[in-house]
Image 1 (cartoon, rainbow, N blue to C red):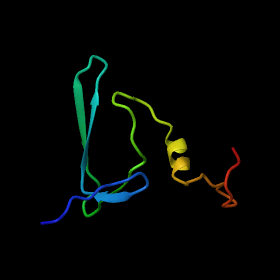
Image 2 (cartoon, one colour; image 1 turned 90 degrees about the vertical axis):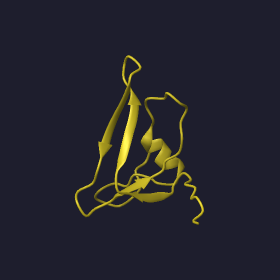
Image 3 (tube, rainbow, N blue to C red; image 1 turned 120 degrees about the horizontal axis):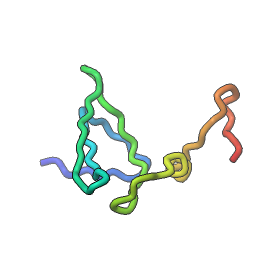
Length: 81
């Protein structure tokens, strides 16, 4: 028997598909399924967690907190904030 795996912020994993579940404006549950092109898999990066019901996140800040920083396209240097 295999042991369960735990993902932590900054960990990546592979997924053959996933389903996004959210709430509509009237509280109804909405879901959408996603699959990559045939013969491919998604690479999923866990950024962290948020409070239930939160509808927006600052993805760039979460990536920065994990040590990922945007680089200038032409120089490869980190962009000053």
